[in-house]
Length: 358
Image (tube, rainbow, N blue to C red; front, top):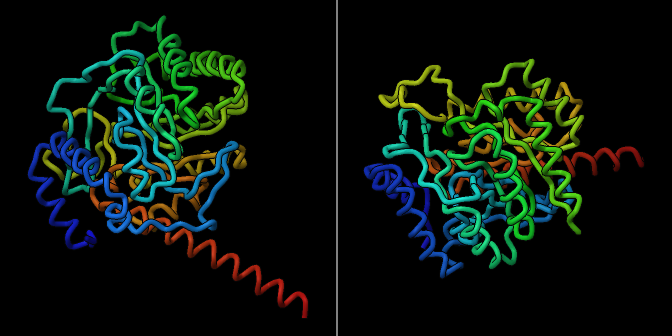
């Protein structure tokens, strides 16, 4: 049973006739069932396993540099099966302290003509306790924990929400992402304040230092930041010594869209975000002199897109919308392209060394 490009197009055609959120849930439920037979998932995706793809970053070893971005597996129900498809790491969430339903439906829209998605999910999740229970069963998947605040939490309680998620998930995740840039949660203004971010990061880091094993802490930023704000982010990283940046979240921009859903409120992801997210990565890498790790995400629909982000300064990449449009084979294609690039560099160095010895 091999899901080739032609077959995936047929599956996608069927799924795209369904409501996006129903299709999302159906796909993951089917993945869970098929996951009981790991050999089938490996035949579907044919993952590449090679030491040349391994990456070491903030004290962690990633089996390959292609991860799943937060939002697909909000409640840590499918991380094991998703990992079998070939991902090097899985970021779950966004997780909040208490369960919440998110925004009213309809809240997820496919912009097929633009190879994009607009979502205004609103941090719908089952809460930190449910996620903790599931992740306690994890034995081998490298997990990132994307954490946020409950929508109903007043500004004076934001830090407490992040701390509660951090404290409870600390034993079961490998790194944390502070999601402070989602455009789909009300009362987010305080999280755009650099002074508050410094305060939040300081509190989380202080708690982290009390642990026997400290976990890396990353900040996920918006693609809609100005150059001046990006310079502030670089200074923030330098001052707080946070472990890295995920660039970028979804955008509120609607430039050059043609889909009839283009005016729906929410965060836009997919191909229209590709150039801007790469620009942000390049800006951060250049103006910081590559002073900190960057995970690049936004608009990756091909191996070429992923390589562009790596060349711009990303150490790892994540996919989400491209995974939905292109299927599991995208993971393999990206890893294969990176593998070829690594091997090419190795061969070139070997040739240069051989010439130098003559």
